[in-house]
Image 1 (cartoon, rainbow, N blue to C red):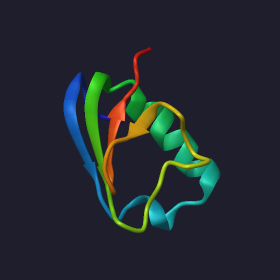
Image 2: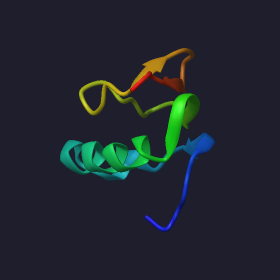
Image 3: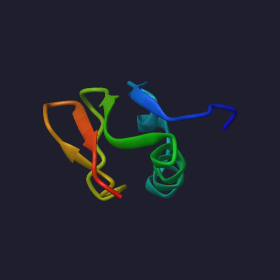
Image 4: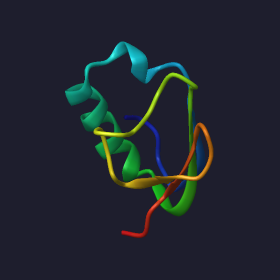
Length: 69
């Protein structure tokens, strides 16, 4: 990824629905390195990190907070 962190907020809405679970897991393993603890991640209404990554906690319907490393 050409992005450099740390980023406070990442919007990844309606993107991960097009990837299989293995690809989603790889994506969020990389995204995790771009955010500090407490940073926010926004997904689409039909998307979830359940079964993909445990690096974030759900704090709203589509909003996740990065857990402490």
